[in-house]
Image 1 (tube, helix red, strand yellow):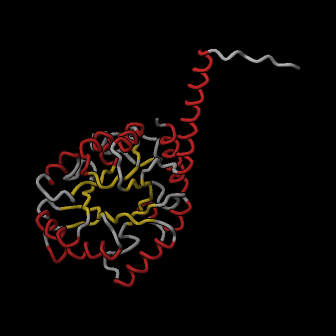
Image 2 (image 1 turned 135 degrees about the horizontal axis):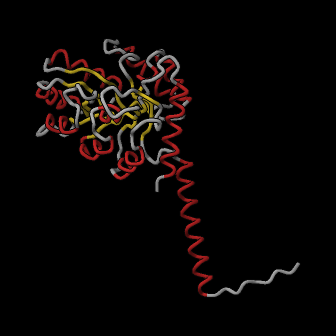
Length: 281
């Protein structure tokens, strides 16, 4: 059958060009997403999600989830580990192809002798960020140690009863302090304290040195952990904010439900994150 050619008018030419450009843009975004489903964000796993398992198993489970970044809780690498034990743990994580970004949550006080080992621990593990629970009178000591160790300190919020329940509480504590002291933005705990997660990110801006991804079923103190995307947090706003900030620090899944069998919920949570990021313009 003979097919008649369609005359190429100027209008047809422009329409064809626009369609080709749109297709090329979509293909480019699709290729970018296939290369990096996380859109440049350092998405990983905080090992507290896997607290019921030993370090070797937690590392293997993290690799199974398809992420490249790891944050360790002291339940997996104790603070009182020997230098040899710390070196061995660091090697295991690196040999698995994971990048260890931070450790926490670790309590720090004004007592220099008690707080210095936390910085030594971070140095031995090659960390750039320590997620901390900081007493209000500890900051002179922390600034003194920062001059020696040059790490970032991220103050973790723990919900409505915490002394750092809002971003303003953190900013008040770090005002006029070393710029390396900032926040770990726990999305779920901020929502439990009545602060929208993305609002917390926008308030803390350059002082946000870590993000803990989680979701909760209520925006109140009694809110409990659920699979990411199944709760009350507006993750469109969260991820648009992170991408708009060109956020360059850890974005770590901290899944607190199902401690004995966390993998199904963790898989669903990370799949939700991938899908959400893929849909954002």
